[in-house]
Amino acid sequence: MKKYIAEFIGTFFLVLTIGLCVIGAGTTVIAPLAIGAALMVMVYAGGHISGAHYNPAVTIGVFIRGKVMAADVVPYIVAQIAGAALATVVVKFFRAGAEVTPMVLQTGPAFLAEFLFTFALVYVVLNAATAEGTSGNFFYGLAIGMTVMTGAFAVGSISGGAFNPAVAVGISMLGLSSWNNIWIFLAANFGAAIVAAFVFNLINPPAQTTPIATDEPPYETPR
Image (spheres, rainbow, N blue to C red):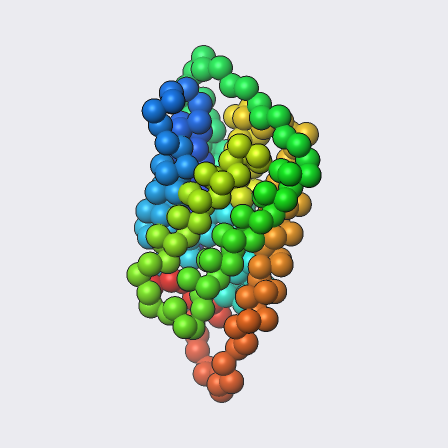
């Protein structure tokens, strides 16, 4: 249960930051920087508990990587979406009366932007937080947060810079994106996660070692 609570909390603060930085915050707020920083600190806060996915696409990627149990996949995703949903309620409370204008997305560019930077995000997560060569590092949170920040700066004006199905649900609930566009995010994000996981497994072949019997779950969380 503690893993799911950690996923709920991390996703909540990520989506809360997105909503408050985009709706009614004024032009002085540098939203991508705040969003990347929020993700970074939440990754450091929950990484040792749940692996700090905060993103259904990351959960799918880590599952294909073999570092999360199948039984945890659906509860992780439910916790992430629930955290995003609650965050939208809080954003609406803080920003009551603020004008919200939905993004106008061009399907092709938006899909490609979401696919490319979700691939980058999942690829970075797998290499920085699950690879044997980077085991025990202390930079994984910074790397993950800066990937989202970079993507938000680069393609935020094209797709909204979600890179995360839970975030896509959140921005749809907030009215920042039309529900008619949700399929773009879901297809691009999950598709990119699957491709990133297969690429990771291709270039990071498993070590040829003899399995050791253990009672620990067959996945790791960053240390």
